[in-house]
Image 1 (cartoon, rainbow, N blue to C red):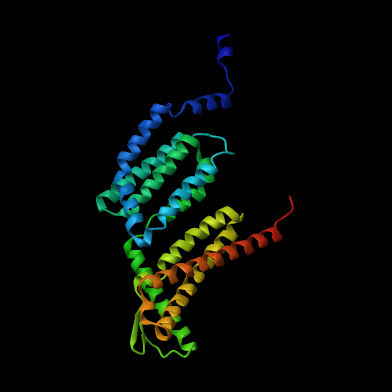
Image 2 (image 1 turned 45 degrees about the horizontal axis):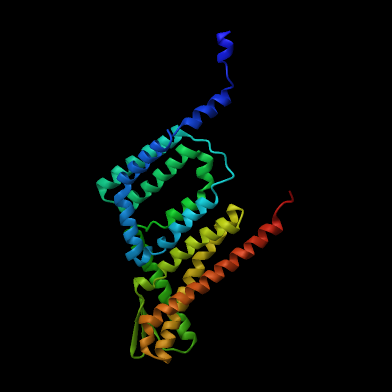
Length: 296
């Protein structure tokens, strides 16, 4: 009789056991304190980069959007904690944090913070919840600035491409130009396409917006990848147009238009145009998805 009374449904036992995992508010508070102690330095340095580094300023927008998306998509999936897998991911994140701290490598250190955050989600809510939050995690990953060695290796080809495109467009408007690397010589003037004018900022921001738009509006991975692929030539083309407009205004209007407030305003306006083009591409891809979608 005692044996028969102790028998329970395995699934029920599993649900009861899983429901107790976490230990209540005290365990959550302890987890938060440990997380803050371990990742305080990379988090503060990331905030400083968002605030002071123009190449990373998009993080000030992306991080709150990621939090909002996670809050918006919090329902619809059953909470099924996976403590073993979560602990495994957290252990990997801690090891990565330790190794990157020894090497003083900021990018890997910040990546370990995101990995630990994903591990906590898996531990307390399950793998399905973490996968359902792929878009917030992707946006948070894009908000982390790339290492300088990668930025420098990408910026120079973009500078050369923008310079070549700008010079070619100026020649079509009968403006005498001479191109030497990333320097465009005009009669009496010289335009130096700096790293800030390489288009790297607009490219990073457009890719981030492409991930966001694809995650919100598109349904298939193929369409999302296509949107990201098209964001790259859009950014490169519009940056070449920006160099052309700068040279055109300097030559025909005033050299003062080559820098300062007007130059920055021109860059922001072209970025708005690029975002509108990207939105138009996303809208066209939604139509393609509807056209080729199979009936339910």
